[in-house]
Amino acid sequence: MLTKYGEHLYDHLVIFAPSVEEFGGSISVKSITAFIDNGGNVLVTGSSSVGGPIRELGSDCGIEFDEEKTSVIDHHNFDSSDEGSHTTILTDGKNIIKSDVIIPSKIEAPIMFKGVGMTADNDNPLVLEILTASSTAYSYYPDEKISEYPLAVGRNTLLIGGQQSRNNARVVFCGSLDLFSDRFMMSTVQNAAQSTSESFTRSGNMELAFDIAQWTFKQNGVLRVINVQHHLEGETTPPNAYTIEEDVVYSIKIEELNKGVWRPFQNKDVQLEFFRIDPFVRTYLTPTASGEFKVHFKLPDVYGVFKFKVDYDRIGYTHLFSSTQVSVRPKQHTQYERFISSAYPYYASAFSMMIGICIFSVVFLHHKEDKKIKDE
Image (cartoon, rainbow, N blue to C red; front, side, top):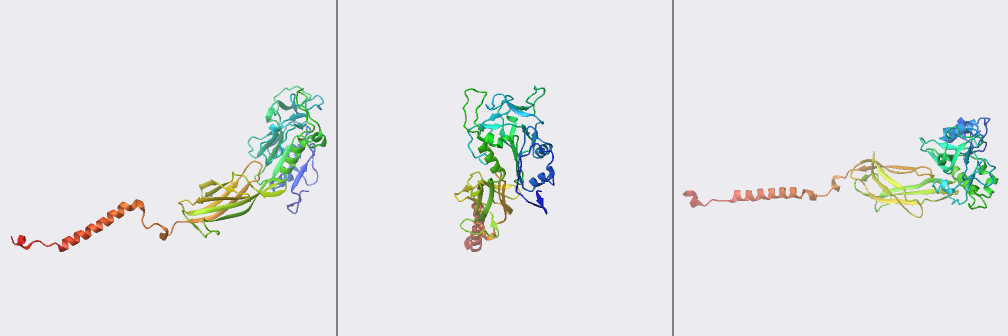
């Protein structure tokens, strides 16, 4: 039972039963999907004998498993412990997703994998290819000759895939249950296909498994807004309404959950948008050591109802969204300049006309013709 009286009993779900055909009780693919839709996090493993429910759940999340009894095969990168089918493959750290949030560890040793291959739905923008196979790998039946093009070939062969939904729920699928086993984590590894390859005392599975679990269960990469402030330059409290072309200060404090501890967020790519229908101002926020991001800018020469918006969406992080609505009014008549420099010619013409009329009036009223000239 995942829910009771309409509320979830758990925050996270782990399914390490790849060949299950029925979960039993009230748990089903539909209930697990509803669990994800309501913000629950799920970690799922598969194997060469993937059952129908796991396959259906993967399809709902943009992950397609290969056929039953197929395995990922690599004739150029397999471990020395392989029994001859070349299904205990090795993959390098360069095939791990380039994200220090999802996989923060620097994994030097090869990763051991034995299981089913997967492919990601290219039409699903939420799917993450966390770990892929080497370019020489493919997914097919180990004991059969290839008679048709495999489902996955090369780096399109997905070994670990994930998804972060729009509600920030995280789901991770791993095609190998053995990847999480003690035997694979503590085993010495060496590429048997290359006689000169380096031997490692331990595989990179432990670091990889730990990082995946930390990220899936939201111990890493979670962002939250602590405080939002905006005010005029030189003041500390926001006004009832701003006036066009005023200098404004906006600040937002963001924290990041890292290994279960809230710490100040320090990334330098957080942007602020000041928009009405379209953004009128878009600028980067300057971070501080305390996790506060601040920016100074001038309001546009347009009035209306605006919003300060921070919309931060990066791979590995939860979606951060903050919106604050403010009003921007036009200037009062007392706030405009008394004289506008561009109107100086008009001012000059008006005053010259006034002066000319005064001079003409004085001359006209006080001019007197000579009497002698008048008599003649």
